[in-house]
Length: 159
Image 1 (cartoon, one colour):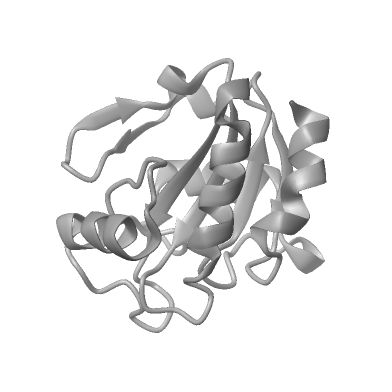
Image 2 (cartoon, rainbow, N blue to C red):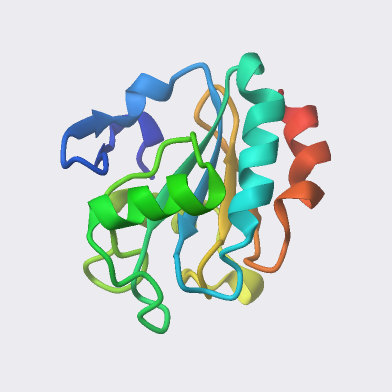
């Protein structure tokens, strides 16, 4: 199993970002979508980001179009949507795949370390969440239906 800090991702402008830039931060990594019934979770994600950002906590959003075509826009359109509709200030990255042979290495690692129900490696839907401590250890996986407010105590415990 690899190390989360060895992985590179792309920001919404297409620039490479090394996950090692997030060392010593607690992370909540989420696959997101703009046209999903769960999209209003952006509100809760922004609230917990605002509440804990001064404690070295970050939410990282990774748009994905693998679930019902619910993230069809370009990276720029997705970023603008998040900012305009939900006042998102946490990082939104370039669109990726989370399942299948072309799944991004970050999500391959997350799924391998914290499989879902019945030990399945796949992501079931948009807004699956992974909590990572400040040492890069993947602590918990939360299903799409778990609203961000219900993760608050887990984040406090990890901080």
